[in-house]
Image 1 (cartoon, helix red, strand yellow):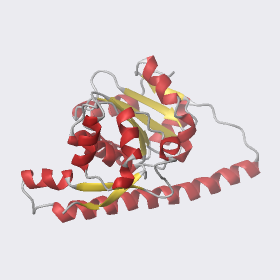
Image 2 (cartoon, rainbow, N blue to C red):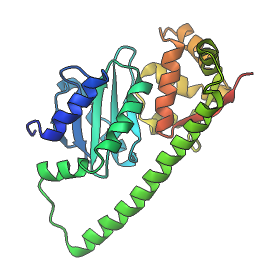
Image 3 (cartoon, rainbow, N blue to C red):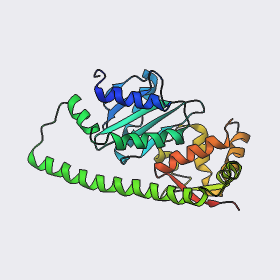
Length: 252
């Protein structure tokens, strides 16, 4: 594991500036799951590496969120070659917005950092060409995915922005209905989503019932999970950025 680089220090300072981490809480990894830098507890690192098979499926800006009631770990793809993991007690939705801004700010530096701390692999000419083609395709797909998420989010925000009071906005959010994004179904979503939190897994299994945010909260409370509607909303928003769920509508 490498010593703190200038990039690492700047990232940690930025994360601290909006309260995402304290003295520690950051890890940088390659797309293969090799840890380039980490000050996370060893048990958290071990949990992260359980999701190594899912890393290549992430597009730039998408994430895997290991959500818990008091603390979450967000694994975000920052570039073609690097992932960032942040352990935070802050709200997942807010943290994701701030992390998205960070990856835009440091976009040109992430891959350079990977190259400085890893030994370059020797490839024959054909392998280099193949890797370049895959990178071009992957970048195009990543841009399309990010644009789609941003457009959908903008539509929802535009619908309520400036028109609702704080109380009305709460009621609006509680009335939203989410659904799984095909080909995901209640039968296969647990195997394909990489979600391990028990409450979140139960919630995903019930998204075919057209339940609102508040009705999902009530169902989880009845099942023994002490979660708030805000937790339900922020968890679904995080899953939305990964392309697992989407807004279907709202209860009138």
